[in-house]
Length: 399
Image (cartoon, rainbow, N blue to C red; front, side, top):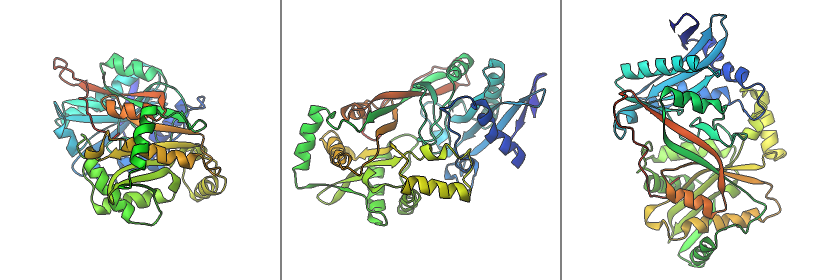
């Protein structure tokens, strides 16, 4: 435990503290109708070294901070993975799950303790808010577009930006969320339509919707993912078993009309994976996923079809087929689903497009999206004299 005269910081090491850690944001945001409490189980999975394979050769810990009256006023987590030591420039750990009242003193004490812990593990910088895992969850500080978040995406008060920047964090990269509605299906860029039509009329290309239970799609996913994505920092190749597990984990919430694959002469070359935004249902669960909420969940998802928002999870085209019109053909193929009367979704959010990936930003604009939210991933160098560099740009079409 570390403290100054007004605040006590305690490491979260038992069930009572875990409960306080998860309850604090619910108190903080109770008057903000946009905030959605994530499921406690989703948060705890990240801290579980057995469940989170990114922590196999890494470490993670978290703290809460209370005032002298014993009232919780903030929380933070710090972590590192094997990948942290291979970072461009310097070994860089992470911080996440940061929440604080609007007071620099409290926020700075939290940043300090995270920094000291990471320094003790031989790290030289920290990025955040982020998590030791997939980038599409609990990642980034919301700075523009304070709308309701999609499932597991962070939402925070506008003052968080000031707390990070006043401490000395710098903008390492921005992540954009693009949004479009499904009402108007004619808003594809003319150039996209042209090349998409050319691809779709070429019999060597084939596009199809996923079929539940067909394992071939998992193996095709692995093929495309490893070719389109494994070049990116922070993403590793996946094997057959991981691909099968991933597909299995998505099946219960999957809508087959939202997952499209592209093939050239029978070889998998592209995918566009979208999911219903189940956050529209789980927002009512107050973080708990007990048997009763599971029943409510499937009733709302499968019977009532009460989700009207789609999230773009992952979009990938293998390098030799990029910029040939395959991206547009995937979208154009999807447009045909939208026009069917049974298609009840209204809006689409394409999540997590880094400003270091101009190709993907262009794809998002081409398909009729416009920037709806902006998150920042900040970096703080422990050596305050060393030169700060923003994230290097990439030019591939994996998002």
